[in-house]
Length: 249
Image 1 (tube, rainbow, N blue to C red):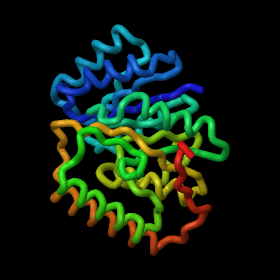
Image 2 (cartoon, one colour; image 1 turned 135 degrees about the horizontal axis):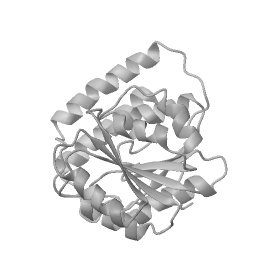
Image 3 (tube, rainbow, N blue to C red; image 1 turned 60 degrees about the horizontal axis):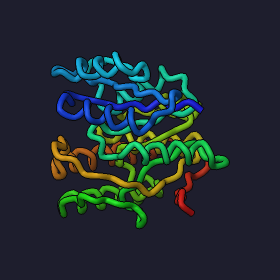
Image 4 (cartoon, rainbow, N blue to C red; image 1 turned 135 degrees about the vertical axis):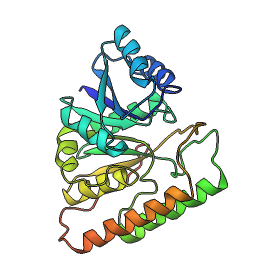
């Protein structure tokens, strides 16, 4: 089965090169492609991606106006014709082998429509650790997601997810959030459409240079979370509940 890996990037000239080096080496299958989705980049990110494209035809460049991380992922998903589509952050916090494990879970497990990485699973490995502030805000947000939206995941925000293409194209049309709450909205849309997405422990290596402000951005996400909850009250929700599962079980 062919796999398209979307890498959203906004001014990532200092990180995109090493991420592509790692993923090209770690994912040697000719059926795996790397779709770098530029979100209104103004630096040398596009030039660096083109240099990788010159030596590896599996790399492609997709340039967009400012759509937000989720917006460029959704737009690139729509253009994919692979069997599986996924996305991973441009900082390479998720090693290639972990993204491939999500793809294998989706491909091999019966009645599974997608798999998401979780940093909060007991079997996950975080070699670099995270600051106390980031751990607390992340845990608080995850609690809010479970309590308000009834999504059962321990970690909706880890930037590594894989879906069957048919599933992705069905649910992307239902997603309205394009930035910080894109991942949550995507999982809500999957649940509403009756798709089964499982949560998988991961290796995640915290990287320097994060643009996420753990306090300010968590506040913004809380407001967006309340908006999603209110929207859910205004519509009838159908579909089977999603199941959280451990791929190592």
